[in-house]
Image (tube, rainbow, N blue to C red; front, side):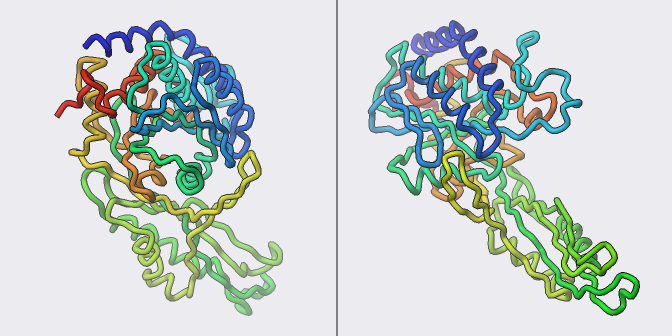
Length: 406
């Protein structure tokens, strides 16, 4: 169709601009709770691209608005990144956005500053081609996602008036259409002991020894967990073990294990906690099972506490939002997209998992490079993603000639 051809052509004319913007974003270090500089850089680009309104909210998320129509669509990319780890593992400077043979490298390239660059330039395509119709588009650069996925959208949906009909999660999907992922929880199991001098351990109770059978039971529990075919089974693993004692010449008086619990579609917060509490070793040790909380100030100083419980979400195959995403892809690229799901977790845990607002995933880059020292994204992906972000609001809002395929 002519309109989609115009959108795709416009995206390719902006290839250099979107690539340069991504390199600029990569050059700005933006760990969780330290995103101020990158947020202001995004504001500059949104102003340059002609956004109608740009807001930085009380948490520090940046929201760029285009249009005033009744159908409210949001696209989300978090602006924070993980750290680089051991610099010796990188073959390029992680903060220069080096480009070689059509690939841009650097921290945040695919997770997920590349998507953010494409989203902003999707907005520019809308403005340049005067595609504002019966929708309002919000391009959201969210904060603190790497430390606490969904927190930014908990704030947006609880504390502001924004209530989208659909939110596109732009985490990397390799240009496929994703419709969900498993949830997750962070849980601690804690045992207590009685310390004494290490020369006579029989006088005390060693908390580490009380924890030892718990560790084995957690491993066995992982093998018993189930799920459904699309998202997969739940999992649990020990991410950390630690203990305390008055000195290294004393018996440990406490021990703690940190659990990474991935939730299948059939799991709930209550069921996951009860599975741990019901383990024979946990009962025998009279261990405490605790769902952790996150309460870290944002770059604007706001503390917005939440439990580290991130619900599973899964959009049904028959949902109109999924059909709209597929139709957008087909109209632009004359082929069917791959339908999939993420292995990791996203801001969708709050949008759909907690608030029931339909989500789909569409993003440039391959998730296998997320958090790696080889993080990268194809420039071609940036261009195609920008076109999709420009076209999807039209399809969703039912613009004539952009009807969803059934």
